[in-house]
Amino acid sequence: QVQLVESGGGLVQAGGSLRLACAASGSRLVIGDMGWYRQAPGKQRDLVAGITSSGRTSYADSVKGRFTISRDNAKNTVYLQMSSLKPEDTAVYYCNAKIIGFEYWGKGTLVTVSS
Image (cartoon, rainbow, N blue to C red):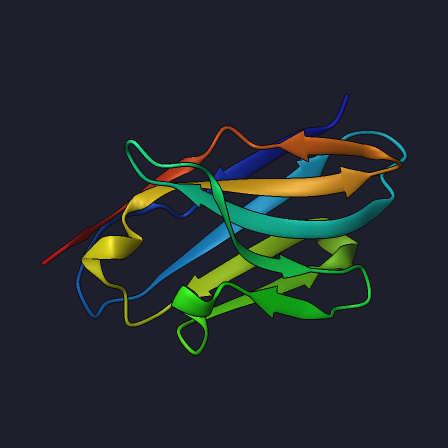
């Protein structure tokens, strides 16, 4: 069974930085696109950043220039480096991975940015 486990969330002041990590585990992993989504209270889950298996990245306009997504294929891990954090970045952040035609989600990690 495939599992995605996020880590790195927490409380940070506005202007600060956090690094999220998401490790995939399971047998015969062939991981395609990976991404980070976030969901604030009362709002829908939105894509924050995505990265293909070859390393091509994409970002939501709201985080461009502040967030960087990367992946380590040898470790089956995707990262999200978040800088210049704003209170509006407060949300539960979810990892997503497409593996052999299926889509998997982590349970989420809470990021809280105080003003």
